[in-house]
Length: 110
Image 1: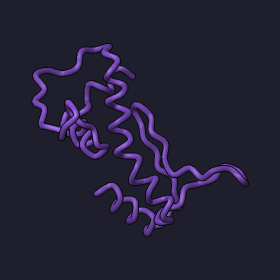
Image 2: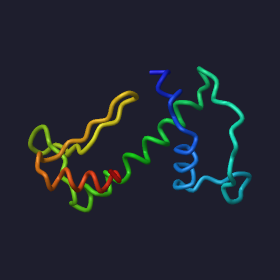
Image 3: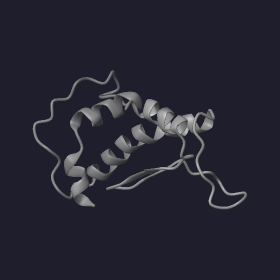
Image 4: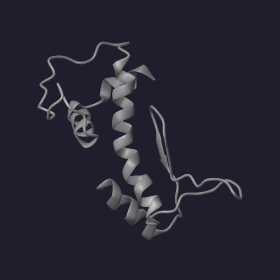
């Protein structure tokens, strides 16, 4: 699982932080020029990965709330699940229709 963080692009981190309203020194977010990567084992790695994962998750959650896509329920009276994100894998659950695939592609910008 630790190797996943080695592949996180700084542009993704910057975009996620901007979208979530992070500030630097109490002001607007300014461009950061990383001088090097994060050292292996640095605890900030997992937090940055979670922040970037949220940027993938939020549009799918919003689409499910608006009824654009519909997740699956594993049993009656259980919450629907539209997606699961893991360190090395992502799964999206929906009806297996061309319309659903088109909508998910539009949400993800594919």
